[in-house]
Image 1 (cartoon, one colour):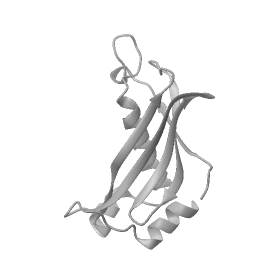
Image 2 (tube, helix red, strand yellow):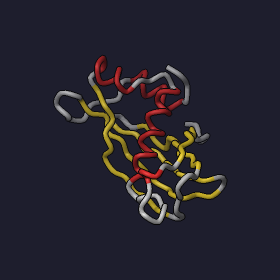
Image 3 (cartoon, one colour):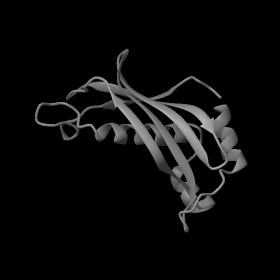
Length: 138
């Protein structure tokens, strides 16, 4: 598996912050979600097509986040994705939000592959697992 992170730039807007201009803690989860979606898109995987054609979606099974430094109004930050493990029906990721070379937020995310109709666990299709595991485009 590649340890090279995928990074997605984000600008901090007023809607992301509290009255002191500091990013509200839950917004970091939004940034991580956006980075995961763009990471899959870069690999040639469209999450809408997965749901419609393959009848699967990835849901967050668990998340652990350490908040280290605040992001502030108008900052440009980068949300990264690194694959740590691809299992039969789950994916473990490391995700970091940083400003320049300073880590603001460090998280681990476990995604579960589930059937759209039953919302029960379902194996990740082999071709998709290969794309994710080997950092190659579909």
